[in-house]
Amino acid sequence: MQLSPGLISAAVSFIFTILILSYLIGDNPLFRAAIYVFVGAAAGYVAAVAWNEVIYPALVGPILSGSAFEGPVQGIAVGVPLLGSLLLLFKVSPRLSSIGQLPMAYLVGVGAAVAIGGAVLGTLLPQISATFNSFDLVSAGVSGADTAFMFFNGVVVLLGVIGTLAYFHFGATQSDDGSVHRNPIVNILAWIGRVYIAITFGVLFAGVYMAALTALIERMDSIRNFFIQLIS
Image (tube, rainbow, N blue to C red; front, side):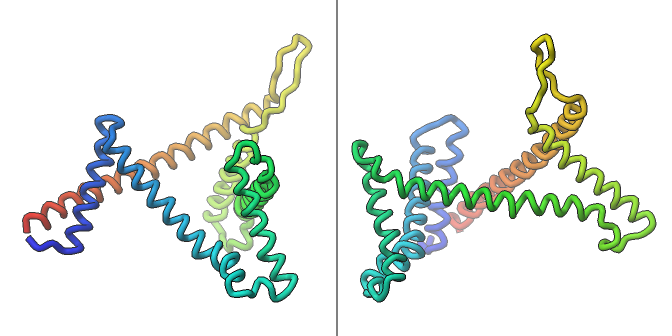
């Protein structure tokens, strides 16, 4: 048996596959060791990417090369991140952690703005546009039976959007006896939205299950290939 890089890679893959599969008998040190290695490797990779793609080219590199001192614009572009990084170091100390709240607040604000912008521009507006486009029979260039089918498809999409939004509408009115009731129309739309949400979660679960099953089959096949290489 020749010890080749392919065999070593297959052996490492086999060992970690067995360690992960050991979770079938419950949480154990072998499974935790595999998770620790995975988390450590992921953290190391993220740190390496952050250093090579952000910290060094945008902060350390300009300071070492002297380009950060060529003008006020370059100085601000480097000085502000450097100051924020130094202030974040105070978060290590419980007594001085309040000093690092300013850059932390900036990071949270930027993250929230990016998330909201992505949700509006990447999800909400395209969903509204797609809902209206479902009824744009002229641009679609359909005729005859295809027109009825496209119109029906548009009604299904529109009903799903309105029903899902109604499901997350929690407004209600209070009766004279003190009980709280939602609008009957909103209740009907919310029930329809619940059906759409259930179907969506079912499809997502099926997709996750198929992905997990595919990964399991691939791992089983890797174990088989490892024993084939081992005895060949």
